[in-house]
Length: 281
Image: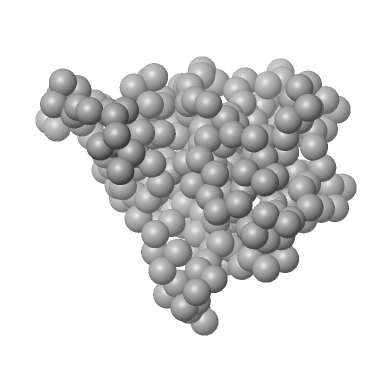
C-alpha cells in the first residue's frame, strides 16, 4: 500500500507576477510541510486570468514553456509534483495552458481545448488530451471548461490516467447570481462536473480553482479531491484554502473498477455517430 497525499488549492492571482510567485511559493512550502506529493494550483495562477469574458480583456503575460518563469516554478517545486496554469506563448500564439513540473523540469503541458464565451479572442485553442507519467502516477490535465465535455476526461482515462487534475478560473453566475456563492448555480455545476467526471471514469480527480474577484469575475473556489467513486474526500468550499486528502491511488482504482469497470465495459460500437452532424447538433 502506498498512500499519496494530494492537495488542491483555491487562491487568488492577478497580473502582478512577482506577487503570484510569492503566493505559489507559500503554497508549495505549505504543501511540502504537510507531506503532500501532488499540489494542483489554479488556471492562470502565473499572471492571472481574464478580467472579463466579453472579448475585450487584456491578456496575462505570455510565458514560454522553456522560459525562465517555468524554470523558476520547477525550482520551487523540488521533489513535489506541481501543476500550475499560465499563458503560454508558442510560435506567436498565446494559449491558456497548464504545466506539470518537478525540480527535474517539465513533465507535461496541456493547452485548453474548449473555450467558453469570448475566450478565443485572447487565446488559441489546444487540440488534444494526453496522459503522462510522473513520480506520483500517470497523470492527465485539463483546464476549466474542458471538464464540461465528458470526452475530455474519457480520453485521459483511456490513455491510462490514474489521476486527473483540472485547473480552473471558474466564476459564479453573472445572471441571477446568488449572494452566497455556496448557493450559486455555477458553483453547483462546478461541483457536479468534478464528481461526475471522477465517477464515470473511476479516477482520482483533483480540482483547483481561483478564489476572490478579478475584474468582473467572482470565482467560486471549491477546490477539492474526489475519489474514483465520486465521493469528495476534501474541499475548501467557496473560500480560499487548500483541500488535502490521503489516498492509495492504485488500491482505490482497483476497488472502484473491480465489479463495475466503466472503461472495461464500454461498447464503442454502440456510440455511433461520434463525429457526424447529429453529434454536433
